[in-house]
Length: 170
Image (tube, rainbow, N blue to C red; front, side, top):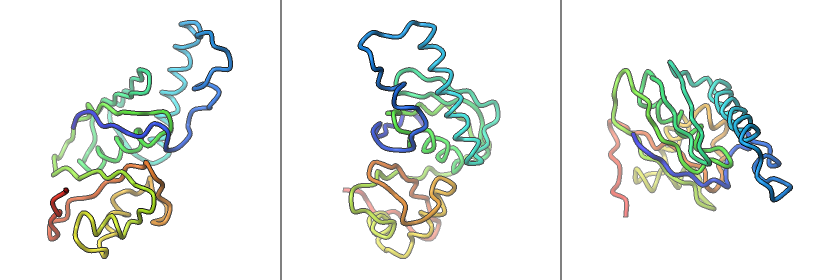
């Protein structure tokens, strides 16, 4: 799919803020930096596991605020969920998707939640009707536990629906 940008100041706080914002102006040693990087990679792996997102031969690389993900998933939907789960983490600004898909499908759209957005309003923007918000909610499970719990800066999947065309985006 490629490289996806995210709002690094929004999302789940997996990493301790003290790690991201050192108390002293001196840079940590290379050994400490490598250990912190590995710890962050393990936390990202744990987040995918906690959400039940399975990736065969999962490999993550983290350079600064960009995570690169490698492996194989069973569907395009799971590919997009893995990208969103990694990107919707506080401190991650981009995800380089190197995943392969066993059964290719059409790609969903992504939508960045703005202040005041609701799933109904997002549905109206992409499909022309508010009534398709349950499809957006379902497409973003398990990352969303409630249709009313979205936040500005969060990226959501807007799924392709066979019987409902996307509206053109302005």
